[in-house]
Length: 203
Image (cartoon, rainbow, N blue to C red; front, side):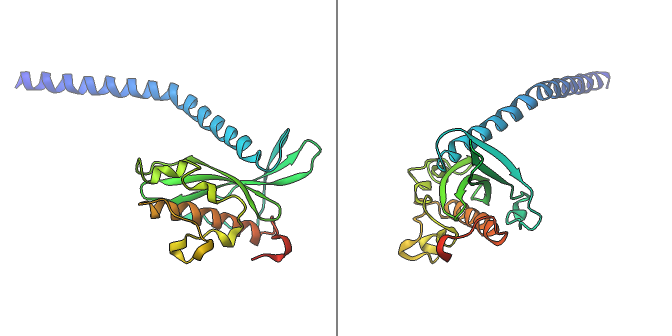
C-alpha cells in the first residue's frame, strides 16, 4: 500500500513540476509570439497597401458606428484601416476578411480603393489541408483572380458566378468559397456604410 502511495505521489510531483515549467515557458514565449504576429500583420499591411500606391504610406484605424460586421459567425470583427500618402491624400482602405474554411478560419488582408476595386490581397492565416486548401496562400493558385474586382464579382463559377466568376482551387471548394465570400462580405459592408462608392454606379 505504501509503495502504491509513493508511486502516486511521485507521479503527482512530476505532473506539478511539468505544469509549472510549462507555465513558465508559456509566460516567456507568449509575448514574443504575440509580437511576431503583430509584426507579420504590419508587414502584410505595408505589402498589400503598396498595391494602392508606391512611396511612404500612413495607416489610421477608422471608427464607423454604422459599419455592419459580416464576421460575427466566426467571432471576429470587421476593422477598417484608411491608407493615405505622404501628403495626406486618402488612397483606399485595408481590412481583414474572416472565412470559415475546411479546417480553419482563414484570414485574408484586402486592399480596396475608394471606388470599390480590390487592388491587393494576401492570406494572413490558414490551416487548411496541405497540398489542397493550403494552396490558398499561394497567390498564383487563387488570389491572382481578386485584383480589379468589385464586391458583386466575388462569386465562384460553381456558385453561379458564370464565366466571369472565380475558379476554385482544385479539390478545395470549401476553402475557395470561404475566402471569396468573406472578401465579398467585407466589401458589401464598406459599401453599405458609404466608405467606398462604386465608380459610375457599377454593380
